[in-house]
Image 1 (cartoon, rainbow, N blue to C red):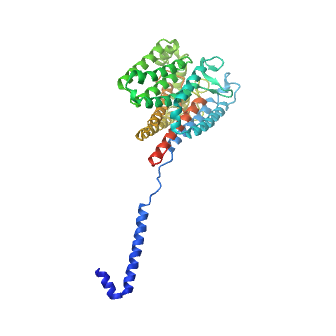
Image 2: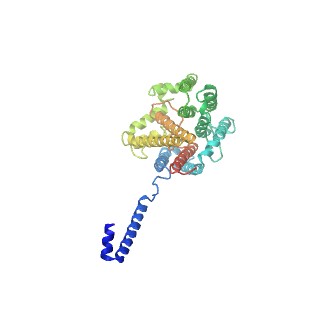
Image 3: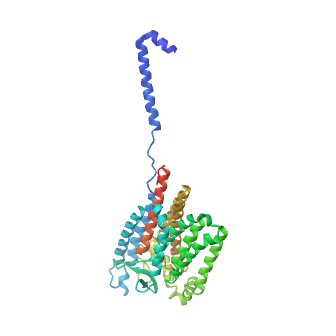
Length: 421
């Protein structure tokens, strides 16, 4: 007020007008600055989990290279003499393209649709497991009937069942949440479904797939909050069942004996033949490997080098460092899957969270079994290494699983931004 009178006495009316004008100008500039400070900025959160996708693509690319390296010499033998040296490379590349296409289509499906279709997908996979046992429909290879011929390619229903069990077990756990502490309404229906699937798989026979499916179902039930005593009883029952299957099966007993003493003369040229040559491959690789394409074991010494035992070829050609990188990438994928599942559960998306964690269990457990078999830590099983081994059905189902996992992550991010599904 004093400054106002001083300005008035010194400059008169013109001074007052100038002061008012300067005051309005200061107010305008201050308002502009305040608006600039509080203006919302666009979130830098990624639209989807790019590191997860890149990790999968690295494994797929490595698999393409190693399948070619492991199979390039197969036409030199009588079994594949009619094939070219690039036969398996071309087939695997086609499988990757098909898997990528199916994965993109699966990514476009919202999780609520997968939730609604989960029982139907399980029923379809179950019917296909029955059809594969019917002569004329199912195709047998090396004494096992696991494939359905589609003309230009073969489809393995057990791979679809792995995905189906993830979806069905998550759906079942959510729907039966209030009954998970009871045996009759909680555990028994799911247990009966898994046993029925197990019987069909053992008739193929495919005990490896049964072990993966059983662990997926048990893992999802455990994460879903099943009663601890019931889960303990289920675990004991599962271990007892697998032990009984081995005890009463002659060729499975021989596999166990060969696994326990692979260098025994009785087993080295028989049941332990693959294992001993796999161990030789790792031994030759040492720290940094003999170089890409330099494997000796793939030259008709190590059977199924491009499928079940591709890790042994990686160990021989890329050494301990190459194997460690593969294990590290799998660890990253599994860790990300569990984190995505945890985020979904925190957002009150029970089905999505359990599906994400079920996919982590599936990929992690199957990779662990394959690596354990290759390294002699587990008895021989006919399980491929996810994303890496040759095999169209497995690669396609793995792609669908990753697509669903990425979709869960995308929907999580939408909700965290305040959006709606």
